[in-house]
Image 1 (cartoon, rainbow, N blue to C red):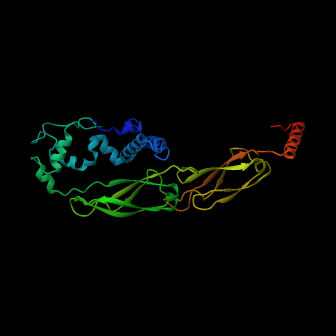
Image 2: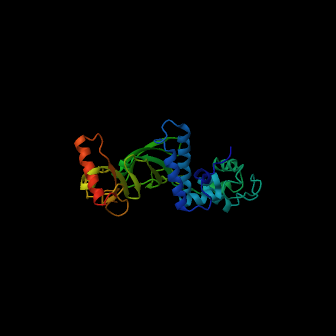
Image 3: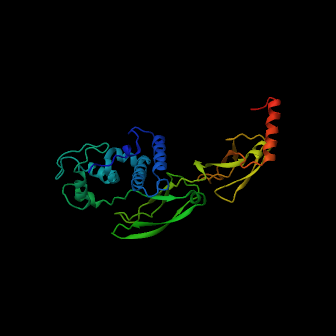
Length: 312
């Protein structure tokens, strides 16, 4: 079975920038999100593949190891130790050198790694296992709603204890997290060979929201404004993530699509204090089921505008 190419999964080149990778991930995550494709098993499978690819390529250290060791990137520490001890040279049981880079050159390498990690093989392997090697931080994917990202939330996470068993931990996710955020939990991961526990990272994905779109700490929403309020001025209640709503004054002659900014009503900021902005886009609605008297008044208004040369 061929190894997964995370670059192909996200549809980016191997020289793609961090910004390009993040942009590709967000676009694909929105396309294949289970909430957007209910009951679609193929979309759910693709969504999991996309998240897995981003967990690797979206992290500078993980990407560096992946570019060098391919699918065995998680064993980078041990493989580098083996190289320093000549494990990838012409040592016993190795059968020659290997070529690194991308996902090529790794056929049969899984057997060699398994031999070393299980305690088999010879040569420098004995000396290698005498040195306790700390495990790399473990990423655990966590999916939350926009409301949970606003308030902060908790999740029960099942973690392997390194001896075949598992244990449950309570993870605190701070307010303000966004898709791609990594929340560190020191000492909450699996036990290391040298004693103690490794670190655990929660890799956050925030589900798309039907009411709000998000860019950093800023939110954007749309409100419907009756035509007469847009013409003469009025007031509407704008929904917010953190409360029941906020009143927004609509000035006279407000255009359809005009956007207003409400400071401090966006998402809380993870770094620093305060919150982002809430941008409100006006959608002007036309009156329906006009009465005869209303239609007559509007007809008179049109005539007055035509006479005054102000039909636009």
